[in-house]
Image (cartoon, one colour):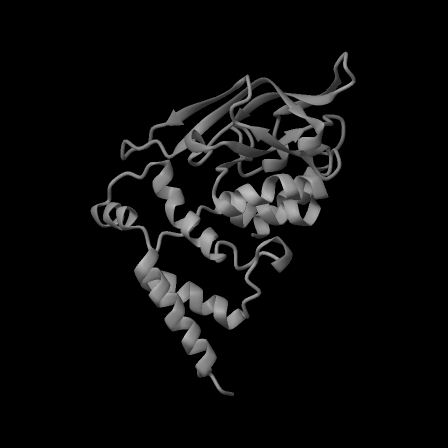
Length: 248
Protein backbone atom coordinates (compact mmCIF):
# COMPACT_ATOMS: atom_id res chain seq x y z
CA UNK A 1 0.00 0.00 0.00
CA UNK A 2 1.38 3.40 -1.03
CA UNK A 3 0.76 5.95 1.71
CA UNK A 4 2.68 8.78 0.07
CA UNK A 5 0.98 11.84 -1.40
CA UNK A 6 0.99 12.20 -5.16
CA UNK A 7 2.76 15.14 -6.85
CA UNK A 8 -0.66 16.65 -7.57
CA UNK A 9 -1.62 16.39 -3.90
CA UNK A 10 1.66 17.96 -2.82
CA UNK A 11 0.98 20.84 -5.22
CA UNK A 12 -2.44 21.24 -3.68
CA UNK A 13 -0.88 21.34 -0.22
CA UNK A 14 1.46 24.11 -1.31
CA UNK A 15 -1.46 26.02 -2.84
CA UNK A 16 -3.41 25.77 0.43
CA UNK A 17 -0.43 26.73 2.56
CA UNK A 18 0.33 29.77 0.41
CA UNK A 19 -3.29 30.87 0.33
CA UNK A 20 -3.56 30.74 4.12
CA UNK A 21 -0.32 32.65 4.59
CA UNK A 22 -1.43 35.39 2.22
CA UNK A 23 -5.10 35.66 3.11
CA UNK A 24 -5.77 34.75 6.74
CA UNK A 25 -7.17 37.95 8.33
CA UNK A 26 -4.45 39.85 10.15
CA UNK A 27 -6.85 41.28 12.73
CA UNK A 28 -8.21 37.86 13.58
CA UNK A 29 -4.71 36.44 13.99
CA UNK A 30 -3.81 39.27 16.34
CA UNK A 31 -6.89 38.69 18.48
CA UNK A 32 -6.22 34.93 18.60
CA UNK A 33 -2.64 35.53 19.71
CA UNK A 34 -3.72 37.92 22.46
CA UNK A 35 -6.80 35.91 23.53
CA UNK A 36 -8.92 39.00 22.96
CA UNK A 37 -12.69 38.63 22.81
CA UNK A 38 -14.11 38.30 19.33
CA UNK A 39 -16.89 40.37 17.83
CA UNK A 40 -19.33 39.23 15.14
CA UNK A 41 -17.14 40.29 12.21
CA UNK A 42 -14.11 38.59 13.73
CA UNK A 43 -15.92 35.26 13.65
CA UNK A 44 -16.99 35.80 10.03
CA UNK A 45 -13.89 37.35 8.45
CA UNK A 46 -12.10 34.08 7.55
CA UNK A 47 -15.38 32.55 6.44
CA UNK A 48 -15.90 35.35 3.93
CA UNK A 49 -12.37 35.01 2.60
CA UNK A 50 -12.96 31.31 1.97
CA UNK A 51 -16.35 31.96 0.39
CA UNK A 52 -14.78 34.31 -2.14
CA UNK A 53 -12.19 31.64 -2.92
CA UNK A 54 -14.86 28.92 -3.23
CA UNK A 55 -13.48 26.91 -0.33
CA UNK A 56 -16.03 27.65 2.41
CA UNK A 57 -17.83 24.30 2.26
CA UNK A 58 -15.69 21.48 0.82
CA UNK A 59 -18.15 18.87 2.11
CA UNK A 60 -21.21 20.31 0.33
CA UNK A 61 -22.45 18.84 -2.95
CA UNK A 62 -20.87 20.58 -5.93
CA UNK A 63 -24.22 21.89 -7.16
CA UNK A 64 -24.56 23.92 -3.95
CA UNK A 65 -20.98 25.20 -3.78
CA UNK A 66 -18.87 22.23 -2.68
CA UNK A 67 -15.33 21.80 -3.97
CA UNK A 68 -15.51 18.18 -5.21
CA UNK A 69 -12.17 17.54 -3.50
CA UNK A 70 -11.06 13.97 -2.97
CA UNK A 71 -10.92 12.60 0.56
CA UNK A 72 -7.16 13.11 0.49
CA UNK A 73 -7.43 16.76 -0.51
CA UNK A 74 -9.97 17.34 2.25
CA UNK A 75 -7.52 15.73 4.67
CA UNK A 76 -4.73 18.00 3.43
CA UNK A 77 -7.02 21.02 3.84
CA UNK A 78 -7.82 20.02 7.42
CA UNK A 79 -4.17 19.36 8.21
CA UNK A 80 -2.96 22.66 6.78
CA UNK A 81 -5.62 24.81 8.47
CA UNK A 82 -4.76 23.12 11.76
CA UNK A 83 -1.02 23.63 11.18
CA UNK A 84 -1.64 27.33 10.56
CA UNK A 85 -3.95 27.60 13.60
CA UNK A 86 -6.86 28.89 11.50
CA UNK A 87 -10.01 29.45 13.46
CA UNK A 88 -12.65 26.87 12.37
CA UNK A 89 -15.71 28.27 10.66
CA UNK A 90 -18.82 28.46 12.80
CA UNK A 91 -20.56 25.13 12.49
CA UNK A 92 -24.21 26.11 12.97
CA UNK A 93 -24.96 27.21 9.43
CA UNK A 94 -22.37 25.69 7.16
CA UNK A 95 -21.80 22.37 8.91
CA UNK A 96 -25.09 21.61 10.65
CA UNK A 97 -28.06 23.39 9.06
CA UNK A 98 -27.01 23.46 5.41
CA UNK A 99 -27.02 19.64 4.99
CA UNK A 100 -30.55 19.57 6.41
CA UNK A 101 -31.69 22.21 3.94
CA UNK A 102 -30.10 20.68 0.85
CA UNK A 103 -31.31 17.20 1.88
CA UNK A 104 -34.84 17.93 3.10
CA UNK A 105 -35.63 21.49 2.03
CA UNK A 106 -37.72 22.66 -0.89
CA UNK A 107 -36.08 24.25 -3.91
CA UNK A 108 -37.34 27.62 -2.73
CA UNK A 109 -35.70 27.06 0.68
CA UNK A 110 -32.41 26.02 -0.91
CA UNK A 111 -32.34 29.10 -3.11
CA UNK A 112 -33.35 31.35 -0.24
CA UNK A 113 -31.07 30.15 2.57
CA UNK A 114 -28.00 28.34 1.22
CA UNK A 115 -26.26 31.36 -0.39
CA UNK A 116 -26.39 33.36 2.84
CA UNK A 117 -24.99 30.42 4.78
CA UNK A 118 -22.21 29.82 2.26
CA UNK A 119 -21.16 33.46 2.00
CA UNK A 120 -21.23 34.09 5.76
CA UNK A 121 -23.87 36.77 5.33
CA UNK A 122 -26.39 35.15 7.71
CA UNK A 123 -25.45 33.99 11.19
CA UNK A 124 -27.41 30.98 12.48
CA UNK A 125 -27.92 29.69 16.00
CA UNK A 126 -29.35 26.42 17.30
CA UNK A 127 -32.58 26.22 19.30
CA UNK A 128 -32.64 22.65 20.58
CA UNK A 129 -32.08 22.41 24.35
CA UNK A 130 -34.59 23.66 26.89
CA UNK A 131 -34.42 24.00 30.68
CA UNK A 132 -36.31 20.71 31.02
CA UNK A 133 -35.22 19.03 27.79
CA UNK A 134 -31.51 18.84 27.18
CA UNK A 135 -30.26 15.29 27.50
CA UNK A 136 -33.84 14.15 26.82
CA UNK A 137 -34.37 16.43 23.85
CA UNK A 138 -37.53 14.71 22.64
CA UNK A 139 -39.31 16.00 25.75
CA UNK A 140 -39.10 19.60 24.58
CA UNK A 141 -42.14 21.72 25.34
CA UNK A 142 -41.81 24.81 23.14
CA UNK A 143 -45.16 24.90 21.33
CA UNK A 144 -45.99 25.93 17.79
CA UNK A 145 -49.69 26.30 17.07
CA UNK A 146 -50.66 26.44 13.40
CA UNK A 147 -52.95 29.34 12.57
CA UNK A 148 -54.52 30.78 9.43
CA UNK A 149 -55.07 34.53 9.49
CA UNK A 150 -57.92 36.49 7.93
CA UNK A 151 -55.94 36.83 4.68
CA UNK A 152 -55.48 33.07 4.40
CA UNK A 153 -51.80 33.19 5.31
CA UNK A 154 -50.63 30.20 7.38
CA UNK A 155 -48.14 30.61 10.18
CA UNK A 156 -47.11 29.09 13.50
CA UNK A 157 -47.48 30.91 16.78
CA UNK A 158 -44.45 29.83 18.80
CA UNK A 159 -44.14 30.02 22.58
CA UNK A 160 -41.41 28.63 24.80
CA UNK A 161 -37.81 28.89 25.94
CA UNK A 162 -34.51 27.54 24.63
CA UNK A 163 -31.26 27.51 26.56
CA UNK A 164 -27.49 27.12 26.09
CA UNK A 165 -27.87 28.88 22.73
CA UNK A 166 -24.25 29.44 21.75
CA UNK A 167 -23.51 32.92 20.35
CA UNK A 168 -27.22 33.57 19.98
CA UNK A 169 -26.58 37.25 20.65
CA UNK A 170 -25.05 37.53 17.17
CA UNK A 171 -27.57 35.41 15.29
CA UNK A 172 -29.72 36.65 12.42
CA UNK A 173 -31.73 33.40 12.21
CA UNK A 174 -32.09 30.24 14.24
CA UNK A 175 -33.19 26.68 13.59
CA UNK A 176 -35.59 25.47 16.26
CA UNK A 177 -37.26 22.26 17.30
CA UNK A 178 -40.85 22.90 18.38
CA UNK A 179 -43.77 20.74 19.41
CA UNK A 180 -46.60 20.81 16.89
CA UNK A 181 -48.54 17.82 18.20
CA UNK A 182 -48.66 17.19 21.97
CA UNK A 183 -50.88 14.13 21.70
CA UNK A 184 -48.47 11.65 20.11
CA UNK A 185 -45.24 10.08 21.33
CA UNK A 186 -42.60 12.78 21.91
CA UNK A 187 -40.48 12.13 18.83
CA UNK A 188 -43.49 12.08 16.52
CA UNK A 189 -44.88 15.52 17.36
CA UNK A 190 -41.86 17.74 16.65
CA UNK A 191 -41.32 20.12 13.72
CA UNK A 192 -38.18 21.89 12.50
CA UNK A 193 -38.63 25.65 12.05
CA UNK A 194 -36.38 28.41 10.78
CA UNK A 195 -36.99 31.57 12.81
CA UNK A 196 -35.85 35.11 12.14
CA UNK A 197 -34.19 36.21 15.39
CA UNK A 198 -35.41 39.76 14.81
CA UNK A 199 -39.03 38.66 14.88
CA UNK A 200 -41.34 40.33 17.38
CA UNK A 201 -41.45 38.19 20.51
CA UNK A 202 -37.89 36.81 20.31
CA UNK A 203 -35.60 37.88 23.13
CA UNK A 204 -32.08 36.74 23.97
CA UNK A 205 -30.69 36.83 27.51
CA UNK A 206 -27.01 36.07 28.19
CA UNK A 207 -25.96 33.36 30.61
CA UNK A 208 -22.80 34.66 32.30
CA UNK A 209 -20.29 31.87 32.88
CA UNK A 210 -17.61 31.56 35.57
CA UNK A 211 -15.03 33.29 33.42
CA UNK A 212 -17.30 36.30 33.08
CA UNK A 213 -18.11 35.60 29.44
CA UNK A 214 -21.55 35.34 27.87
CA UNK A 215 -21.09 32.97 24.94
CA UNK A 216 -24.29 31.06 25.76
CA UNK A 217 -27.80 32.41 26.08
CA UNK A 218 -31.43 31.81 26.95
CA UNK A 219 -33.82 32.49 24.09
CA UNK A 220 -37.46 33.32 24.85
CA UNK A 221 -40.21 33.00 22.26
CA UNK A 222 -43.41 34.87 23.11
CA UNK A 223 -46.15 34.56 20.47
CA UNK A 224 -43.59 34.58 17.68
CA UNK A 225 -45.14 34.33 14.22
CA UNK A 226 -43.32 31.97 11.85
CA UNK A 227 -44.60 31.38 8.34
CA UNK A 228 -45.32 27.75 7.51
CA UNK A 229 -42.98 28.02 4.52
CA UNK A 230 -40.13 28.34 7.03
CA UNK A 231 -40.69 24.76 8.19
CA UNK A 232 -38.24 22.16 6.91
CA UNK A 233 -39.88 18.95 5.72
CA UNK A 234 -43.38 17.99 6.78
CA UNK A 235 -45.13 18.96 9.99
CA UNK A 236 -44.32 16.59 12.86
CA UNK A 237 -41.29 15.17 11.01
CA UNK A 238 -38.73 17.45 12.58
CA UNK A 239 -37.15 14.69 14.65
CA UNK A 240 -35.70 13.13 11.50
CA UNK A 241 -34.22 16.51 10.54
CA UNK A 242 -32.83 16.90 14.06
CA UNK A 243 -31.09 13.54 13.94
CA UNK A 244 -29.69 14.20 10.48
CA UNK A 245 -28.32 17.53 11.66
CA UNK A 246 -26.56 15.97 14.64
CA UNK A 247 -24.76 13.55 12.31
CA UNK A 248 -22.93 16.59 10.97
